[in-house]
Amino acid sequence: MIIWVTGANGFIGRYLVRELAGAGHAVHGVGHGAIDEAEARRLGLRTWINGEIDAANLNALSVAHGLPAQVFHLAGGSSVGLSIERPFEDFSRTVASTARLLEWLRGSAPECALIAASSAAVYGADHAGPIPEDAVLAPMSPYGQHKMMMEQLCQSYTRSFGLHCSIVRLFSVYGPDLRKQLLWDICSRLKAQPDVLTLGGTGGEIRDWIDVRDVARLLASFAAPSTQASSRIINGGSGRGTSVADIATGLIQQWGTDTVVRYSGVSRPGDPVSLLADDASLRRAGFDWRIPLDRGLADYVAWFQGQAGG
Image 1 (tube, rainbow, N blue to C red):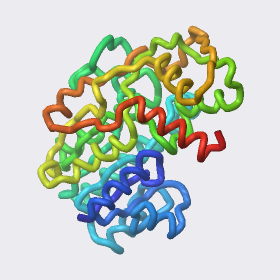
Image 2 (cartoon, helix red, strand yellow):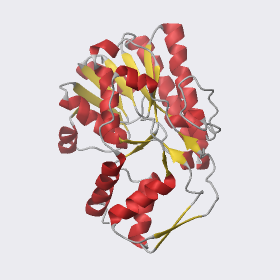
Image 3 (cartoon, helix red, strand yellow):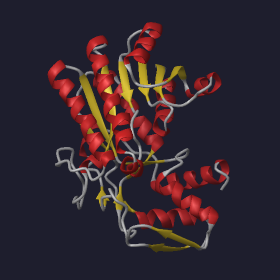
Image 4 (cartoon, rainbow, N blue to C red):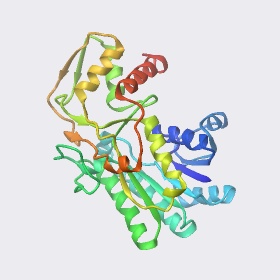
């Protein structure tokens, strides 16, 4: 099957490409960042276009390789903080790119199934427990707002033009090669000063942590014939909540230090207190999360110390 991945050079995109190529699919990618031929072969990418998600690049792919059966749309903003600093840039990356992709699909590949990676940030705050897919959306940041707008565009094209658009709301994805966000920040600080670790917030913030290798399997499961024509919204989360304090403790144990952890008590703008998935839909689908958190944290620390100069 011919599959395209937008944002294939990103953190999740690289894992997904390897998963899809390993299953025998012909995978082509478009997005930002240089990838040489040797690296593309290693990932499993048959073609890589370094550029915008626009008609010119999408037409170039289709002329060279034929129309896709599926497009996994991973391109877009990936940081709450950056979305607050540069909201229009985040809008362009997430909303405008999705609009251009949907319009191209409508005119050129209306039978193609689109699987769009969204974020739990669309749910916002005031959720004390597991959040179902039909919860009211109240994003707290431009990042979350733009992911919600992306979803709305997909739903609009599904209703108005009959496109097949599935949306996976991913929760807190982590794993080797992630060079930003909480795990990277903690490991970087442990490397610089292992005695004391000072973090924002209270440490009681809850997130649903999911290993990127499991996430790649989850997304790739949408390539199965039984899911290709479905249009749905599904939580990409495990249903297991872990506090920031427990993450810090787990990383420190793996690091092998006696670091003292302190919390400022001041939360970052745009950060909800709790984001935990109601995973009933995934359980009904029979999906299993295979990598437990303790193993995932151990793998992350080993990667950081070995590859990031830890």
